[in-house]
Amino acid sequence: MANLKRLLVYNCAEIVQVTDRGQLYLAGRDMSRVAIRRAARGHSLALATDERGIILEIGDGAEMQKKYSLSEFESTLDAKQGSLMPGFVDGHTHPIWSGDRVHEFALKLAGASYMEIHAQKGGIHYTVDCTHEESDEKLAESLVERLTLMRKSGTTAAECKTGYGLWFKDELRQLQILNSVKQQDIIEMSLTYLGAHAVPRGFVGTPDEYATKISDEDLPKLKELVDFDNVDVFCEKGVFEIDATKRILAKAKELDYELNFHAEELSCIHGVELGCALGARAMSHLERISDEGIAAMAATKAAAVVLPTTAHILRLKPPPVREMIQQGVIVALGSDFNPNAFCYAMPTVMHLACVQCHMSLDESLAAATINAAYSIGKSHRYGSIEEGKEANLILIKEPKWEHIIYQLGCHKDLIRSVIYKGKLVL
Image 1 (cartoon, rainbow, N blue to C red):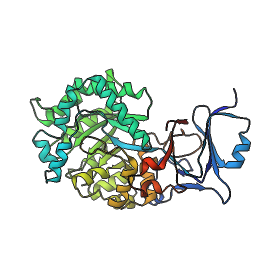
Image 2 (image 1 turned 60 degrees about the vertical axis):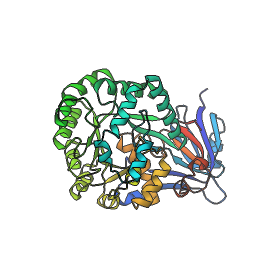
Image 3 (image 1 turned 45 degrees about the vertical axis):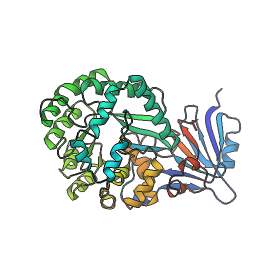
Image 4 (image 1 turned 90 degrees about the vertical axis):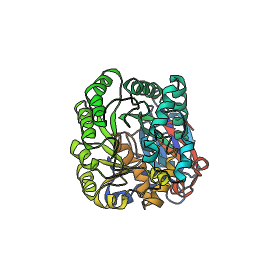
């Protein structure tokens, strides 16, 4: 049928577009001025998609109902005077692993630092061992469950890392499982290779020598065998320092991968400046970023993916987000979902960003939508509600979108519907 369309959402009190002029990101003062369309008194708003789930139009509800009266929609949704928002984009996750680390949470509460646990072969190494012993089927099953929980919490796209394999064959296995699950299309997935998460136990050599193995052997082989989008390195003192990080990232750039890596989490070794010089798309954590690093990120338009859960759980000083925003850095948000920071809900992350990082509500929303989409190179497709973009949306019960951040821990009660590519998935 020529007039068949996928979705009509009507009776919205407001539609939170975030951007309305095709911007690929918001930075500086623009982060505090997200675009919102509010219905006039006695009126409502509506949104229609085409047959592929691409947004056709946003407008007055009565006018839209009349305009599309001869069209047939696969689904219609009465918003009941709720707020329609973009689906959240999680800029940093580690979703594929086995073996939780609840026992280490008690150690951290007792005062043990992240690197102390790491040095005792806990942390990453513990999860690597558990993941190595798990079957492909179980890893895929748990990955599907986690992505589904993310979606129920309003996330419709996420950057998804490996990193709990380390050895070539184990990292290849994780990438293959990620690709297989990606075909189920639960959410949008940007896949990241993180073989340089730690030097694996049993490797005879230095971190620099392991970095050489990754750059000279593993990355070229993986390029031939499996699809992924980004390359990550845990650039940190005592893990992979500047020379080792540069070796891996330079090879990744040569192979046409995006650079999206951990930097300045526990110490400042000027990984940010290195990343900016190499043309990195995004860098995460940044608790210890230098003033020079902030200036470099602002100049090169690299996204700063801030992870409030990490600072919260490890009792770290939060990243200097206010300084970043004032300098014009493109600030994004991620959950850092992993066995060390077990949080997959972006509304919780946004709340922490406001309270701990002193972000405004608007800034937090921009960081969790358009800017997080920019951090994975997809803000031309989603991250805002605009004509021509994919209808990845959430509908909340309240007429004002701010409730999704304000009502801490209540997102499951607030979210009435999740829409992915124009289809109702919740």
